[in-house]
Image (cartoon, rainbow, N blue to C red; front, side, top):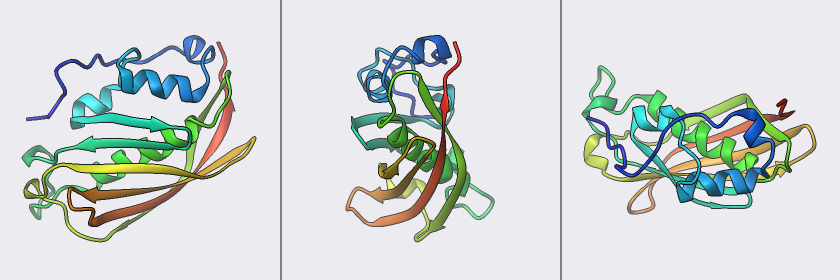
Length: 162
């Protein structure tokens, strides 16, 4: 029972096409629906909903498909949302011909998430973007703004090969 938005298209944009866009233009295309969301977004039922340079917001509604054996939402669900929003935040700072990939990731679970938590949002914001490394932080908040999970990442900037 995923919460896939019905109007989304899912797939992968070839490197040769991504290389023609700035990172910000690419992520704006994800939000606008002119670029397909990745298939993990379909699998977990999340949506990339806001973007500006250095900031990306993802929304999701955890459900019973996301539970671990203890009955709370599996940490991998939160980790995936944070990896996506932080990586995309780094991506928004990159020029044409460049992409990025995660180098390291640190996550701290502050409060449990359950299906009763309702809609959550994962916000990734850039801390520093350089020529070789980008740094970002991410937060998962509930609808009242309560901090549920916090993370930081570093991403290696790579040249996209056609």
